[in-house]
Structures are given as structure tokens and as C-alpha cells.
Amino acid sequence: MSQGSSPASQEGAPSLETRTPSEFSPAVGGPYAYYVLGVLFVVYIFNFIDRQILAILLQPIKEDLKISDTALGFLTGFAFAVFYTFAGLPLARLADRWVRRSLIAISLATWSIMTAASGLARGFTDLALARIGVGIGEAGATPPAHSLLSDYFPPEKRATVLALYACGVYVGVGLGFWLGGWINDLYGWRVAFMVVGLPGVLLALVVRFTIREPPRGMSERRPVSLRAYNLRETWRFFASLPSGRCISLAAGFHAFAGYGLGAWLPAFFVRLHHMTPGELGLWLSWITAVGGALGAFLGGWLADRWVQREPRARAYIGMVGVLLTIPFVVASLLLADHRLALLSFFPATLFGTLWIGPAGSIVQDLVPPSMRAMASAIFIFILTIIGLGAGPQAVGALNDWIGTPDAIRYSLLYTTVVMNLAAAWFFWRTAKTLVHDLEAKKGL
Image (cartoon, rainbow, N blue to C red; front, side, top):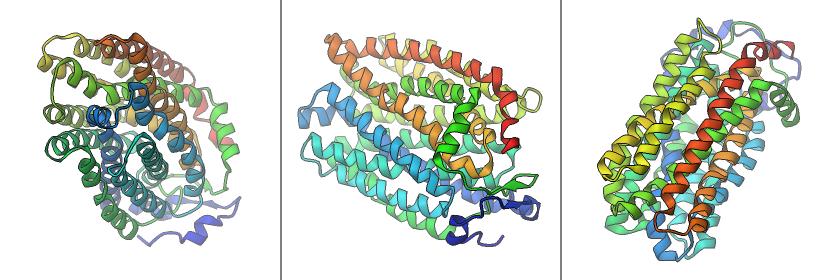
């Protein structure tokens, strides 16, 4: 396959040009496509190692910097989420016009350096600024990655491929728990940030010099418009679709519970079960990596097979998954034995990740190829503001408001049950309008 479009040609695409993708079809889904998937999977692992390592380090940071749970909730939530989401929109617009692999490489180098810089923080403000830098860097990864993978693989494999990419989330979170806890117990939390941050700079070079930029719409089996859409046009089109609105809210409410758990579950086991970060990190590493990756893969694989008979299957997979999550999370928070509590978290993680590939593929399917990165960014914007922005912050504030030694248990119980029920309802609402909304892009 040729190197693909140059930056100039990507940036200056004629507004009404169309391309028939069949001339590029031999490369779609081939060995090199799987190489790209593999590299982007590793990038996503680094993304979530650097994002999630803070959770396993919350208690030692709290003790060292003398800050409240509300402040810790800000560090794990809004300090990252607001800048991550707002930077993601213009970066996604750039991704729909410029070279996507180069944007991913620059973003990876940026967030890796800012993660390492977190270890130099002298107080709350320094750490908050470093987290903001991580958020801005990570904003440039997933939207262009979704767009690239949607070009490299055919639509009928889209949920599976995006689910495999999303497995990097859970491998990254698991490695972040393990590495962060282990390095903290040996050398302290500052060294942990530096050790996990700096290798990402080398990976950025791999992305830049080994991933080729494919023609947009390469995987489609019909002529596609290469018209350049601006952010307002993409937002208005995506928001005009009931299923676009509902899938975003479904993901957002589930992410509220998921990010709240991800940020505070380590502190829960440290405070109430008296585990050390290193001991807990070893448990959470395999639970999160195996359970999350298995659930994400199964969700995409099942959805791509079921959708051939039932076009609403991808939304139904999400609904069933979040409902099955609830009883296992409740058990994990209420069981007195820490081993049983941790083992209960494994099926909760598995079921709670079934939605990832199906939801991402719904977003990509709803819009034309030249909107894909921006549509992904809009989806992530809504998901992250509701989930990562409000979830950890709400749990931290509830902890301080309740004020009892076991307050964290009840904060997590309330947010998990209520938000997952809301998510299930919105997944069901997505299914009601999905078939009709998939036709809308043909009119653009």
C-alpha cells in the first residue's frame, strides 16, 4: 500500500470530492492493518497507565501533600477531564484534516512528559497543573485512532476492532495499578510517575515512523464524500440523531460509576480492608487487565455477530452489560473478606466493559467518514465530562459530606447503582431509534 495522503493533501481536501474506495480495498483488514491495530493498542495501554496510576497512589499522595478527599477527587476528575474534553474537540477537527498518525505521536509524547513531571510536584497546585497537561496530551489520541481503524477495517468488523483497541484501557489500568503500587512501596509515589511516564516518548517515535496514513473512507464499499465538515456541523448532525444523544448519555452515566470506582476503589481497600498499595495493586492489576480486556473483546465480538441478524444488537449488548455489573459491584463493596470482595470485582469488570466496542462502532456508523474523528471526540467529550469529570469528584465530595470512617463504601454504592440503572435506560433508548438514524448520513 502507498504511504497515503500527504499532510497538505489531507488538510486541503476539496469540499465536494468523492472517492470510490474499492481501489484501496486489498489493504483493508490485511496484515498491515493488524499491525496498526497492535501499535494503537499499545498506545492506549500507555494512555491508561499514565491516566490511572494516580488512583493507586491517592493515599500516599494524600498523606504526603496533606490534601482532602474533595481535592483528590478534583485531581482524578475535573483537573484532567475538563481540559481533556475541551482540547479533544479542536484536536479531533485537526485529525479530520491533517495526518492522524502524527497527531497521535505528538499527543503521546506530550502526555508522557507531563506524567513524568507529576513526580516533581511540590504541592496540590503543581500536581493539578501536571494532570491538566496529561489531559491535554491524551485528548489527541482516541478520536484519530478510531478514525484510522475505521479506515483500515471493514464496517462488519468495526465493533470487534474497536473493542480490541479498547482492551488497551484495561491492560493499561491493570499495569498502572501494579506498577504504581509496586514502585510506590519500594521507592515512593514520585518515582512511580517518572518510571511509567518516560517510555511513552520512545513509543511516540514508533507511531510517527511506522504507521501509514490511509485515504479517508478506504474501508467503505461505496463512493464516499470527502467534504470537510467543521465542528459546528458535526455537532449539530450528531446531536440531531436521537441515538447519537442517547448512546453518549448511556456511556456517560456508566462512565460516572466506572470512573468513580476506578478512582476510589483502591482507597476503599486501603482504608477499610487495610491493604497496602503494593498488595492491592497486584490484585487489581490482573482483575482489571483480564476482566476488562475479556469483557471488551467479548462485547465487540458478540455485537458484530448478533448485529447481522438484529441491527440493534450493539445497543442491547451495552444495556445487558451495565445491568449485570450492578450486583457484583454491590457484593464487592459489602463483603467483609477482602479476597472475596476483590474476586467479586472480576465479573463486575467483565460485564461493565461489554459496551465499549459496540458503543464506539455505533458512533462511527452514524456519521460519514470525514466526520468520524470529530464525532468520536464529541462522544468522548460527553462521556468524559459526565463520567471522569463528575464521577470521582462526586464520590470524593460524598465521602467528606458523610464524614464517617466507612463513608467511601456508601458513596460508591449509591453512585454505582443509580448511574448504571440510568445508563441501561439510555442504551435501551438508543436501540429504539438506531435503525432509522443509521440512514441519516446518506443524505449528506
